[in-house]
Length: 85
Image 1 (tube, rainbow, N blue to C red):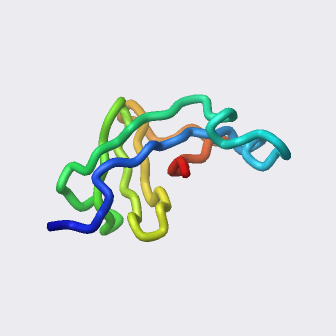
Image 2: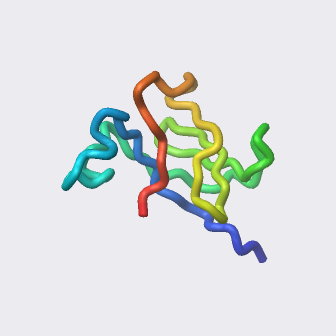
């Protein structure tokens, strides 16, 4: 039995709106996706999650996105990938 989460919601948030007062990350996201554990470990050494065109290595303890591909490409400059709370 694993204690790692089997599912996360990833948010892609523009840097310029991420820290604005009153705007939640969920409201500011340009895209979101539910990713599920693949059972694989990514190149970062963290578990890999995939779904809705997003593949991410996520540290399940800190809920930090360590690596991400969006539709098979690296994340565009100016966007941050975060795990929804």
